[in-house]
Length: 308
Figure 1 (cartoon, rainbow, N blue to C red):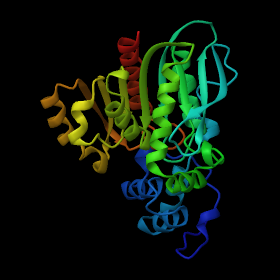
Figure 2: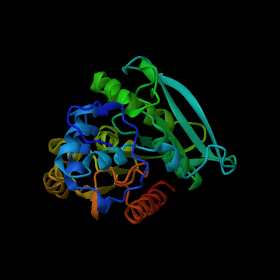
Figure 3: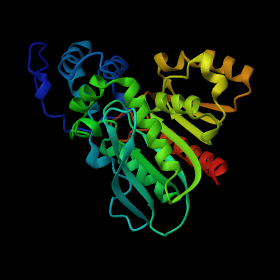
C-alpha cells in the first residue's frame, strides 16, 4: 500500500499484520497520543505517520482499536448479570444519564465500583472492564457521558468529537451523579470506589476531590492530577497508575505529591516501565499484557482492601 502524503488515508483499512509495541516507532505513538486527545484528526494522524518513518502508515493503522479481539469477559458470562440502566442526573447535560450496570449473578450486597471511560464515550473496552470488575465480586457501573446526546456512536472518532462538544462541567456532573446513584443502589454495600482511564483517570481524581469522605477508594489510570489547591479535600486513598512514556501526564504528579504529603492524603504511585499512555487498553498495540495484568491485580486488591 503506497504511503503518499496526499492520499485519502482517513478511510484506509487497517493493516492486517499484527504489530507489537517494540516494532512501532515512538514518533508514531506520540502522534497517536495527539490524535487520541483530539489535537489532530484521524486523517492528519495517518498522513503525518506515513512520512515520519518507513512503514509509519502501517504502524498508525495498527494502533487503531480492534474491540472484537479485546473482549475478556463475555456479556453472556454466567458469573455476572449485565444491563443498561437510566437514572436522574440533575445539573448534568440533559438531566438524565444511562450506564452499563454489571453485578455478580448471585443475589447479594456488593462493594460498588464506578468505571469511567476515556474521552470518547462508553466503548466496548470500558464495558468489558466493568464486566471484569463484576467477576471479582463488585457492583460495577460504567456511565456513558454521551448518553444525553444519543450515546456512544459505535466508533471512537465520532465519540471523541461528540464528547469534546459537551459542556465539560455538566459532563463531570453526570459522572458525579453516576457515582452517587451507584453508591445508593440496592445491590451496593454503600462502599464506593472509582477507577477510570485517560479522561476517566482525570475524572477519577476530580471525584476524589469532590466526593471527599463519600468516596472510599480511587484508582486513576494515567489521568490528569487533581488541582493542587484542592488536594486537601481528598479523603479516600488513591492508587495512581502511570505509564513510563507519558510526559504530559507524569509532569503533573510531583506537585500533587508535594500537596498530598502536606495534607496527609494516602496515595501510592506505580509507574510501569516500557509502557505508553493507554497501556491497559488491550484493543491496540499500546497494550502491554504484563503491565496491564499487574496494574489490574493491584486495582482489584486495593478495592477489596478498602471497600470490604
